[in-house]
Image 1: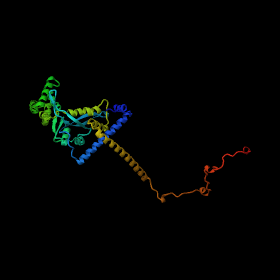
Image 2: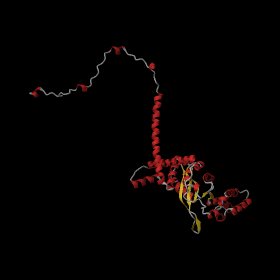
Image 3: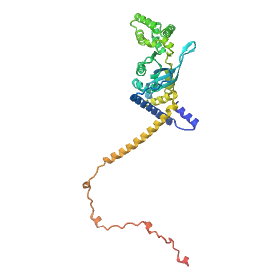
Amino acid sequence: MPFKQAVKILEDLLGIVVSKSMGQRYAEEAGAAYVQIQTEEVKRLEKEMREAPEAGAEKMLLSADGAMVPLVHGKWEEVRTLVIGEVQPAVKEGGEWVVHTRNLSYFSRKVSSQEFERLAMVEIQRRGIENAKELAAVMDGAEWEQGLIDYHALKAVRILDLPHAGEHISPIGAYLYGENTPESKQWVSEKLHQLKHSGPNELLKEFCQLQEQHPEEKVVSGNLAYLEKREMQMQYPQFQAQGWPIGSGMVESANKLVVEARLKGSGMHWKDEHVNPMLSIRNMICSDRWKEDWPEIVTQLRLNTAQRRKALHQSRIEKNKAQVASQPVLAVADLPEPTFSTSEVSAKPKKPKINPWRLFKFGRSLYQRSQSAKN
């Protein structure tokens, strides 16, 4: 939650008063420690390549997408998110069969697509994707998302998100009947229904004929080429019969609930180095792994503190050694001979001063009575 709200709840529930800046600093340090833990785990997996644990579900689904977040100085950067879940049997809702997923877990980073492929290994290995009996990937067709599947899950059934396929049908309808006209909307709705229940074969043939009629129109040729390239990913009747979802709703929800709800609030602008730490904490909480992973974060924080102290102590030692080494070493022959003036040689040595406490009259009265007082 936002830092200001978090410290207020901390005060109300536990009576602990901290400033907003302190709450932000500790949260970002914990997030950075979690990023460090996961990155080190990826390095270990790359060296050992241990076998993944046995999967907890027979049918598993993964989906990935990107969302933009605001940085300081008016910049916007893409955050990539991977969602992994377990597929449940289809249920009938509103007259149609619907497939739900459960036990969702998230992995988000603001990094390049190549680095995201590498770092996502920690979550993919943890969920045991390699040992899932059935596996599918619902994506929106972006090249980096297909590269992610090539890298981690070649055996996965690839499904093009149905609404994303509709985004490449709508421009053709707008070209034929005008943009946002009732005729265009009706035509697009009919084509999507045909694609969902009959597959892409007849639809692609129709678009090919349309291209022959309008060979110079790039709207038709460009979108047709995109759909033809992904024909095998649009076999929606077959996918539904196998019990797979045909929409990437779970990753779209992740973009909103995991990423944008925390990093895209009103007036929020993040420093680049603080984005991934906050994303890692959000992933841990939204994946319901706080009890499992928080003790590791505490251990890592203590280890980092000990390493900083050791490094500071060592730097001080090195600095002292450098100062000693920089000072010149004088030989006896290089020392100047002492010189004395005539007055200093002929002068009599002075008597040392006597400490006044040495004159104290031990054992005698400090005050003597007068003679009259004695009589």
